[in-house]
Image (cartoon, rainbow, N blue to C red; front, top):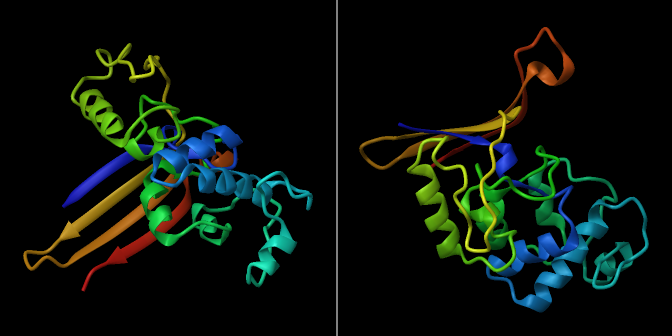
Length: 209
């Protein structure tokens, strides 16, 4: 049985990230620079309220011309899976960046004290290997001694309080290799309802045959 708890502050909120940060996320995750520019602009056009197409972006006419049945929602993302409807997003890329993105942190940059390697891809001039090494070193230290630990670009971990939104992942694997997994995102405090200790924000189950 494997259980992990992740503070959503360590992830990149796709509703809050600006265009350069989204570009870094895509480019550092293996997307060609020109395509990363197009995708970053398409994400912004998806979540903004207007139908004015930005440079390199995509609004409804561009979607329809490309064979899509509908255009962008012109509202914030309600769930990260909506990224799969954005022009240029492949399932393979989504699966690659999925552990590092959220719609719950309301932060345009991941908190490096809690960020997984996939979220650190949103930071300029960092490789996946560097991100993995940083996370491994950070996780090997206790919370007090990791303060001041720095990324290759010099950004250091600062003291932080506790977050309010967490993702819990539980995976059970049988001796024959068959597994079942549950991922739940919870917000402490019930989202404003004082009678509830928490509120379920996201629930996803998966299994293998």
